Image (tube, rainbow, N blue to C red; front, side):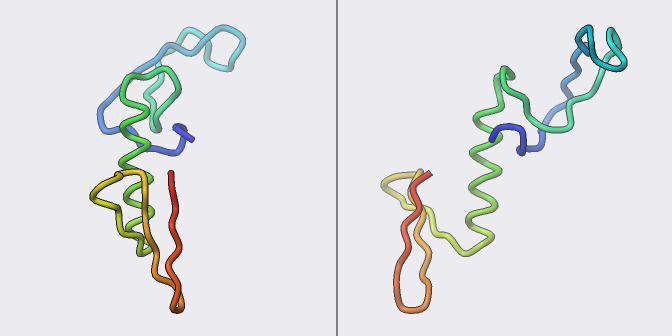
Length: 78
């Protein structure tokens, strides 16, 4: 899931042996497992997508979103 969050700062890695371009530097475009900010970036990215779709984040539990749909309420816990 972390791989879908865009990076907010420039982070460069060295391409590992066995891959095309091995030994060269590469700029990360999206978060990657092992980077310190990956979890935080994923949370911000997911929050943006869920609120864009009409979800309302709970004030008591930041992992709970509610969606009002056709007379019913749908709860999404992430």
